[in-house]
Length: 242
Image (cartoon, rainbow, N blue to C red; front, side, top):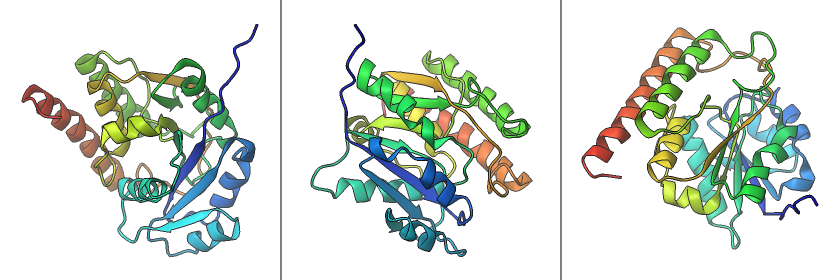
């Protein structure tokens, strides 16, 4: 007999900076029957991204200070003000590189296996040629090997397409305002001994150029911030911090 999936309330947070062309494609791919609310955080866009999100009927939150982490935190702040917060939050990028229709695969380990955090692994999934740039693959390899060596948690990716329990998010006490958001979540989850699961996800070439790995400056800054975040939290552990 197959296990019965217990349906939990799922809300989606999409940080978006100048993604007017790709955002409607992302929103149309999200399986509406599995999602209670879609929150698009307009992160100081100048191309009408917020207006495109509003036209789709989803919730729009404005975050005028740029930064991926800031946008995610603004989305969580909105969800935290609701009378009934979600059971699960799914984070999804607005560039149409992830396959939003695979959202049920991300929430399934939480609903069926009691996972706390589910990472969508682009490394383990099907990738369109040229979708995951070499600099991203190298950065992923270094960061995930460090996490494995320091905490014994076997992961292959820092992918942004992920699902996390609301109560686990509160324990994680996320703080990062920019490039370190995803790795902060994974390092803190390892420190707290949360149950982390990876599932393969599909990945395509994004619409437009990446704001991070699409430039040399963005790649260097992101790589530095990821390594800094890993070691900062490791050092705080050795000193008895959180």
